[in-house]
Image (cartoon, rainbow, N blue to C red):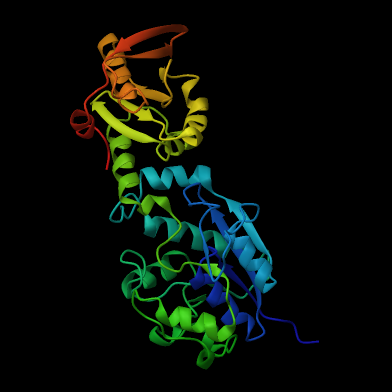
Length: 348
């Protein structure tokens, strides 16, 4: 009995990695998927999937859904703790926002290489497309990743293989190069056409990525956080989770306020309020807010004015705000801050 060739694939759940896997499966290659959970991937159960009236459910991550649809196993590997060091001190720097793309990709590829023997796989593949992303998918960077990960010759990009140098994988006839693709550039029409040809009708919208470190607003909040991080303070996953929630207003070099925008964000902020100063309107509906940094009495009053501005009492002369922290609780009666003044502090 002829033993099947097995390949490990970096599966994000997006269209490109899905197509790369399908191209290999159609050649009779046994695929095993790897999804590296960094803690920085968008997970929005309300995001519509292409070709469907309903949302993709939140019970199964999109990468797992791809494995289910194409009938291969996907391992979810938690690298969130290790990734904190990468995201705060990337060797190859950041992209346009807060995305350490080269460091991130290098880490994933090195880990994939380490798993080749465990799964008795012959090579690693990705859904990368030459020229698609500015930081990691230029020809020189793709070559750098091959060599730096230790996968030189054994890293296959099925969607762009015909535009790249032939790999050992192809030379050894582990795959049929003529059945691979030569996609290039940032446009997604070739991928969408291929999906239609292969009968893939349900997939996430193909534009963009899943990492919220690429989001401009999050990037500004992220770099502001690092800039004002006290010397010697250890960064935690919680710090970066908080950056995802609410409006962030930098009130001074030593103080920031995070204000919930709706009931869901108020609920999400509650755990953070337990060991921080927190503020909440008393007699009107409004946001929960937490303070980050060193707090003075004047700061509390000003923060209360910010909270009043975002409450249903923003048109009143005064709003009562409950202020809790350092085992104390009090109420402040403050005039809501004017909209124009609020805007100068907020991250946009």
